[in-house]
Amino acid sequence: MNCNVSECRKTQVNICGQVMRISLRRICKLFLVIVTFILALVLISVTNTERIQTKQIVFTKFVKRSYRRQLSLQKEQQVVDHIKFQRKTNGVNSVADDENLGKDEIVNKNGKIKQNRIQNVKNVMRKTVQSDIFISVKTTKSNRNSRLDLLMETWIPLAKDETYIFTDNDSHIPENFHADHFINTFCADSHYRQGLCCKMAREYDIFMESKKRWFCHVDDDNYVNVPALVGFLQQYNHSDNWYLGRPSISHPMEVLDRANPGQKLAFWFATGGAGFCISRGLADKMVPHAGGGRIQTTGDAIRLPDDCTVGYIINHLLKVPLTKIKEFHSHLEGLHRIPQHQLSDQLTLSYFNSNVIDVKGYSHENDPTRFKTVHCHLYPYLSQCVDMPRW
Ligand code: UDP
Ligand code: MN
Image (cartoon, rainbow, N blue to C red; front, side):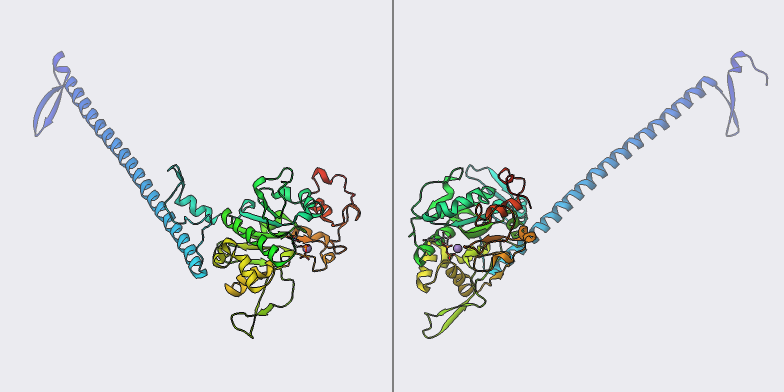
């Protein structure tokens, strides 16, 4: 092809049969415009896809979150319904820590939100811990040195915050003990029904004020295995009706039925000398017969001691059975029969004269009740146990 210099920088293009001559620079420009246009298109589409994807992710997360919240609300509702159903079937209207069950928010005195619905349901469903137990010790002034001091040297310090001591005519608070947990009942200092029921009535009423989950009563000649008691109560639902203890007789207690002259009525009771525990659900149900000092009036009506009166209210009036627990022990049984290696499984122990736990350690002169030795078997690392003869 013949062309001059200026023509040499032009190219022949055949469009629709017509030959057009376009300069190379124009072609380059056109090419650049097309490339830029394509790049812009690609860029726009990529950005849009990312934005759509991000939007999709945010949307999916939102949907998932609302779904999960919906699910958890449904679950909570199921739990709430379940507990309410249990209460209804048990006839219990609890005033315990779960009284606000199902409320969206629990507001404290200052108007601040103290607990929301989720925390509240969690609180009801959470495992029982030591602080949920009210351990009530019945004692009398004359047993102060002979019995109470021994408890103060052994198990009580391990449950100082949970223990409440009910005494008579004694306002001298033991050393290192909470002043408001040492209650002078001003009840009669006698081993007769009136004095004993009067103390039990105070024990029950103060437990009701405490809002704790479990009411456990013991005598001042009981050793309480605190961690075992906590683990034991964890197996039961405090909102249900539980009367846990050990009967001292092999048959139900029989008394004359005052409402039906000539007839007898029979009921089971847990002996106070072995200790017993009552759930909050049941304690609430007992209010009409036990609240506001009525344990004493009920005891007077049937003329029975405190532990029998409690059994009468629970087993006879409320028709709630006694669940017999062999790990509660009184001195009415042969205590030497408990094997040393099973001591950590026992919930309570006792003593009376030579009827004591058979355990090696301190001499009988130094530890006639065997409580100090038992205590050191359970907690050998305590400083007070270093001088115990090893076996
Ligand atoms: N008790 C009491 N006042 C008394 C005598 C005893 O409150 O005048 C208490 C005592 O502190 C113990 C319970 O009643 O917690 C049982 O007393 P004890 O062990 O002496 O007799 P038991 O009934 O076991 O034979
Ligand atoms: Mn006793």
